[in-house]
Each structure stands twice: as C-alpha cells, then as structure tokens.
Amino acid sequence: MAASTTFCALACGGTPPPRAGVSTTKQGSAAKAPVAARAEVLPSWLSLASLSALPLASAEPYPVRGHFPGRYQAVVHVSQPARDAYLEPTPERALPEGSVVAQFLTERDTGSAGPVYVMRKDTENTWLFAVLAPDGTPLDVGTLPLCARCHREAPADFMFGLPRPAGT
Image (cartoon, rainbow, N blue to C red; front, side):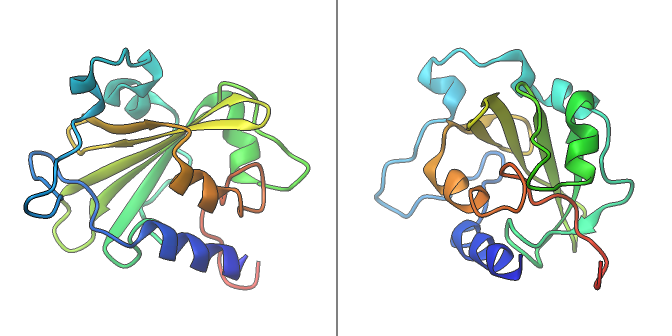
C-alpha cells in the first residue's frame, strides 16, 4: 500500500489544485473552460449540494496523503449503499454501481475551502471522476486518465479508504 500511496502523491501532486476564480494555467496558454461552460449536461449527483448531503465517512478531518499531501485536510462523504465497503475496503468487497465518494479538501493552514474530488462507479469496472472548484464549479469530469491511473493501484475497487492508524 505504501507504493500505491506514493504513486498517487506523485501523480496527483504535480501542479497546484484549482481555486475558484483563479487561473492555474501558464501565461500564454489557453485556459481550459469549466465543464459547465463547455455546454455539457451535468448529472444531479455532481452538485455540491448533493455531495454535501451524502453521509460522512470520516468523523474528523484527516491529513491528505494523495491529493497534494501536506497542504490539505479532508472529510469524505460516501453514498449510503457504498459506506460499509468504503469503510472496510478489501479486494473482495466491491462498491455497488452508482456509488459516489466525495473528498472535500480544506487548506490546513487557513481553513479555506479547497477542491472537491469525486468518484462515481458507473459500471462494474468503470469509474467516473470529477474535480470541482471550491464553489462547486466542475473543472473536469469523465474517465479522467490521471485519476484512473492512480486509483487503479488502490487495494480495493479503486478505493484507498480512510487513513488507518499505524500497524493496522
């Protein structure tokens, strides 16, 4: 699992995460329009209100190890049918189709809202990923190769689960 966590940290931690209203592109490069501005129809499960209403999987915020480690802390919301499998991930325990997992990040130093990373199990072997700005604006949605590459290394059905105390 340590190798998987390291791989995710390298794959996901290369560039700063998006912030609402702030362009993260280099000068002279074309900014990628938010998903909503590209006239794509967004599913209802992707709204910030829907994601925030999902049951909490983490009672307290925890230090993030995969998405920009050291900078953020997170809480995770998981759809009810997936909650038990998410909390006790094993290779034999797949999350049901339609499962939604949302990781809400906040800056550790300031408490400011950070990005929201979302996964939804579309079919038995297909996950959809989304990156939302702190205000809920979808920045990218789909089978996102960078997300899939890291999560494919997870110990259980594309899921790393919550951090575990050392030795467990």
